[in-house]
Amino acid sequence: MVRLATVNDAEQLESLNIEFNGKDEATLEHIKESLLNNQQEIVIVDDENGVLTGFVCIQLKKSFCYDDFTPEITEVFVKPQYREKGIASEMIAFAEDYCGRLYPLHKYELLTGKNNIIARSLYGKLGYKEDGEIHLSKRIK
Image 1 (cartoon, rainbow, N blue to C red):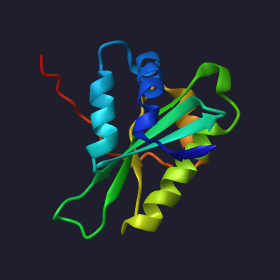
Image 2 (cartoon, one colour):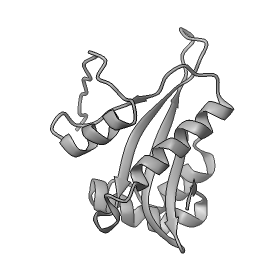
Image 3 (spheres, rainbow, N blue to C red):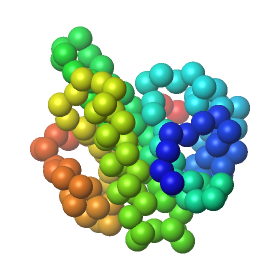
Image 4 (cartoon, rainbow, N blue to C red):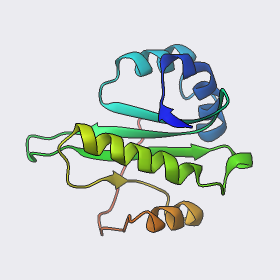
């Protein structure tokens, strides 16, 4: 069942995040705090009888330059043993529907690796297209 994450999901989300992003990226306390208080992020999970199989994170971007919000899908993860069952597609569809009902918006954005062929194929099937923008980042030590 795809649903919004709650603070009760924090321990399982910590485990999923370690599997996805590696150890030491976010503490359990940080995850709980974020789930309770981060109003710029929406976290969607797939729950199979109390076991979280994956998550999607959406950042709500808002600028004075635009009337609408631009939700950005920033993280998509499904545990390997649950892949190829449509779970990522279901979570993204849930996220799009949820954001579309609550916020004025005219587009969604997402970021993925140029070499992540499987993810790019999935996103293409869901209607996402490369827009010619170049994403830059700068690491702070």
